[in-house]
Amino acid sequence: MHARHLPGHGFERERWRNGAGWTRRIVQQPEHGEDFAWRASIAEIDADCRYSAFPGCDRIQGLLSGDGATLRFDDGHELRLEPPHGRVAFAGDAPPACRVDGRVSVFNLVTARGRARAELLHRPLVGPMVFFPETGVQWLALLLTGHATLPDAARRPLLEPGDALLLWPEAEAPRRIVMSGGGELFLARIVLG
Image (cartoon, rainbow, N blue to C red; front, side, top):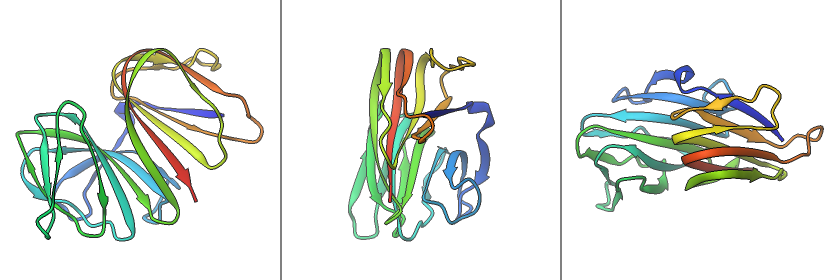
C-alpha cells in the first residue's frame, strides 16, 4: 500500500458551490476538476444555511466540533448530527437546510454514485492499526485527537490533530501499512467502481 500524509494546514479553502459557506478541501480523486469520483472536506458552519446540491452523488457527514446540527429536507425529513461525533448519510441531489446550534465543524465526504461508495467510522487509535491492501479500496483517516505515525514509512510522518492520511493499494507495493499512536479518528473506507 501507499500512504500520503495530508497536513491540515495545507487543506485548500474554497467556497461552497452555492456560495453559502466555506469548506477546506482535504483531498479529491481525481485531484482536479468537478468530475470527481469522491472528495473529502471540512465545512465550518456558523449560521443556518442551505447546503449545496451534488446531483448524482451521495454524502456522509460527521460532526467534528460544536453542539450539533439538524438537516431538514424539503419533504420534512430530518437528520441530526449529535455531539460528539455523530454521523449522517443522505443523497446529494436534494440539499437540506442546515440549522446549527452555534458554530460547528463538519467532515464532509461526497461520492459520485456508480463510481464510488463509502462508509465513515469513528474509531479510537490505541497502539497499532493495520491496513491491508484491497483491490479498489482507499482509506482516508482524519486524526481528531492525539498523534499517529507510520513506523515503517521512510520519513515517518507524524500526524497531529487535523491531519489526514490517504492510503491506497498499488501492485508494486502489496504490503500492509501500520499506523500507530493514540487518540481518535474518523476513518473513511472508499470503494471505487
